[in-house]
Amino acid sequence: MDPRRIPLIAGNWKMHHGSASGIELAVAIAKVAKTIRGVEVVVAPPFTVLAAVAQSLEELSEQRGLLVGVAGQNLHHEAKGAFTGEVSASMLVDAGCRWAIVGHSERRQYFAESDALVAKKAQAALDNKLHPIVCVGETLDERSAGKTLEVVLRQLRAVLPTIVPARGAAVIAYEPVWAIGTGKVATPADAEEVHAAIRAELDAQGGAAFATATRLLYGGSVKPDNARELLAQPDVDGALVGGASLDVAQFGAIVQAAASIVRGA
Ligand code: PEP
Image (cartoon, rainbow, N blue to C red):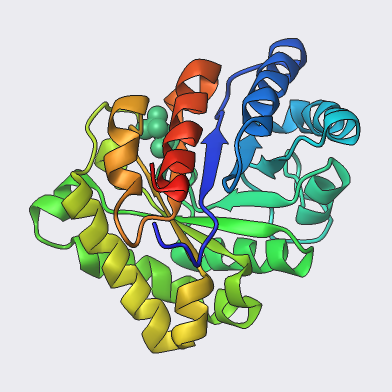
């Protein structure tokens, strides 16, 4: 981590939690976040509970100064229209979101989302003042074929014309597909190699200020026992956490790991 960037720990709940258990988890996370300084915390619940979670967090934040942002896990790039089952960026804002995950590998893999579509989603997010968390990452076959940087930089370049003008508003999450939900985590050195390549590309295409301002998250089986080493890498500015974000003790420990690095402890 680099002191010029505030670390961000985001939890992707995927298709888990209804309103009662979702609110319970979000409130528990907010209580942990309250005890921590210098780390931004975001949760991404399913669409159906976004508004309820956002409202509970807002009520807590008025009462106790808690700070947990809420993210949509996806959005449709059009503002409105005949797109049955879809949710627009402005609807996420209406539900209380300030963030939106776009291009998660599960969207790319199961819903055939292309690089161009992901860029449109990032644009729709930014147009609505949402911070997009743009996911990029290679499959195991691509890594084995030595194509990691080629794939990641291709995915990144597709979205750069959209996010460069937004300066530091967008976040990039490097999530090697083979590490998501598998318990296999990239080594800190492997993660840093890709993050440094992403940062260099941000610099080349958007300039030094843009590269310095943009946060890069690592995602893929981040757990309390590997978080600190990953987060200690110079170009890793936080984590996008799936499985471990469903458990307040685990997610809290990952947030604590980031906070301890900020404190220099
Ligand atoms: C994710 O879904 O973005 C993710 C990183 O999942 P997990 O932490 O479970 O690997």
